Length: 465
Image (cartoon, rainbow, N blue to C red):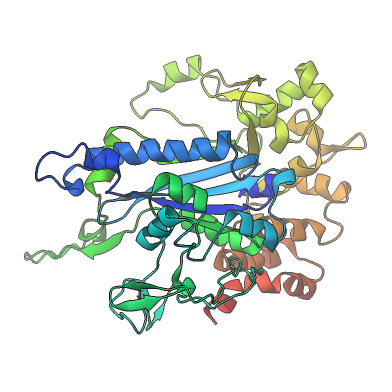
């Protein structure tokens, strides 16, 4: 979500699924072998195809110049790998209206006579179902209806959706196909990009992210991780001592292609530009990590634990000429300097683009919360003492310093905290944060805060209705 705060909402959400009928796979199968018998081949070919897709998007810029890109590789239980990819385009290339959506995404059957190859691929890869009343055993059925809301409605023109994907153009033009004894029309077509579908010959769903509120749920979906199952081990022996850690276990399915993907050490996810997570700690209260078998006396003599990202940030603002000239906020510092964990120092950045993100701090942590507040408002600070000094007077705490600088005079800092959390927190976590702010920060007008953030705090209830 740091990428969203820096570059804006994603513009395109793309899903690519492995096609076991790709000729690169079929040509390398031995006699009587099926694609599922060669998980190594599935993994390697899919990775090669996905690298081609990235080259089309990032190098050839078929959608426009890309500011940020995030992808994750997942594996279906039946074994085939698939990729979820989110793209944020640069300002001059943003998709701003339904006409620009239609240039990238199509949700209709193509003309069979003009585009026979594309027509065959849409029928092969981009038709949903049939489900619902036609087939109630379909995996997408939840409580008697399709969870993906197929069939869609006919639509003469593409229009914006409210906190959802756009309603793509699906004209009632009489075109239809036969799929498993049923007649299907444009309402059953999964949105696709004609160029990418023709190029890759696989299921490749392309969606436009039309609203900002949709983004949080997209990121949650992309980074949800593996599906897990919890199970209990029941022992036949009667044991008086109940060991819940031993009895209750978690497990998950690992398919052969995923096993090979990990053996080959292929990337499972990537974020461009990378996001630096910046430490925030009170003086002499930083976390220290070391090997449990280390000799502590020898360790203390060799390693300077007083050097952290934050203390060296202060040091650079005191001693480095470029840092003094830039006079930037802590969160912006990684854009110009590189942190070396080995040597525990910042050096000037020469290549690669990254952005910084300060760790989240709860208001109930008190002084650490106010320290983070000061770091977001004071540019180029020198040591902790500089943050405690206001108009030449040294104050006793970071809270007093924030108060003297006028950061706590109104509920603005509480609103900023909630506004930042709205970007990435789910509603249940947001409500917990709101309650924490009421208890620990004593806002002057709690009712107004509630009214300003009511929709965000209750978004899950609206979604269920």
